[in-house]
Length: 228
Length: 192
Image 1 (cartoon, rainbow over the protein chains, first blue to last red):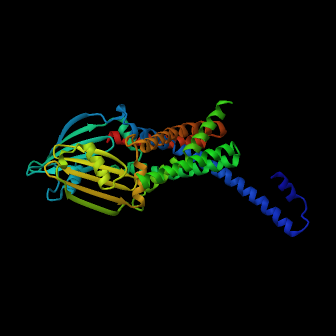
Image 2 (image 1 turned 120 degrees about the vertical axis):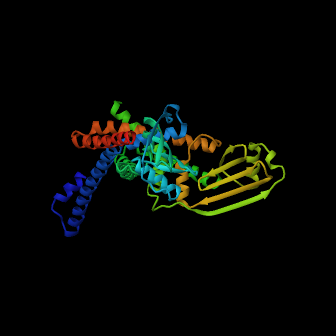
Image 3 (image 1 turned 90 degrees about the horizontal axis):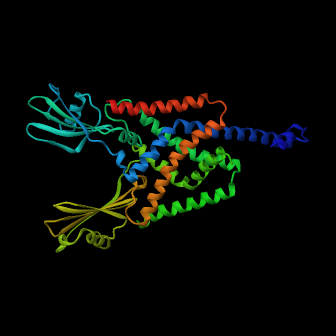
């Protein structure tokens, strides 16, 4: 590059040579800027997403192995709330959501764990840290809640792919963070490979490893898709 | 070779070996996160119901093999048995099949669902566990390696940043913001 810059600084013999030299100079300049820009994205993007990548790694291992120490705890307490104001003439899901809102709880009512009889509606409400089982009596407008705390690890692992929890407005921030982190993750792989290619570090053996593993992974995916 | 070079090498080799897999997990994760845009749906649903004499007396494992051959089902299978029925779910990326045999009748119900591209991507992303033969075993192994490499990348990435950058204030601020967000989310979920 220095030779090209030196060439550029020497008086051009004609206009064409001057244009070529100027183009080369600006190309190198923008190339260097681009490389530095990619490096910055890789480093700062990686730092911003450190915890998400760490959580992805740990939670993925948990999904594959179901470690005992990470399983939800069964630490339950029971409490009651009187005089709730909900309209009982709604379908089960709407009613469960209204009860959840009047109890100021957050979470998703589970349709497969919900039933109604003449005197009450019974349903489970789930959020990453807790599971509630709620019985709401129509005649007294009272709710009995069995609250089970799951402990730290289920919450940690739930951040792998958590959408916003109903009534949990703060969790929307995490949803946006995960969206950004997935995009940064894709960029980090691409920019990491670009930085490595530019650096010429173990290029030949690295390319062999990269393409062998790429081919093997693709063959594996196609094998699963076509042959099961 | 000093520690910096060793860590840099680990970071590089782990990327090269697992780049495709990790890229696949991020790309399929992207499709999952933006599900409103990339919606899942079934391209084809096939249902079969037929009467087969004495089917309820067949052992679940034999029943799985029998239904695999008879209905040309592929992928790994899981058996769920109870007093009323035997349900065998077959699955591989793109296709899910369910075979249901009621103990009180000599009949079998088979439902095969073939999903669209987005469904296939979801299923690649969610495919884990060592059961189902050597194909799935190897997949689960790659899955584990990808998960471990995610942990290695994050930790070695921090080390490499710390060693290469002289001005670290911005880096510390970015890292602390991410730490604050993560732990305040955990705290928020556990407290509410």
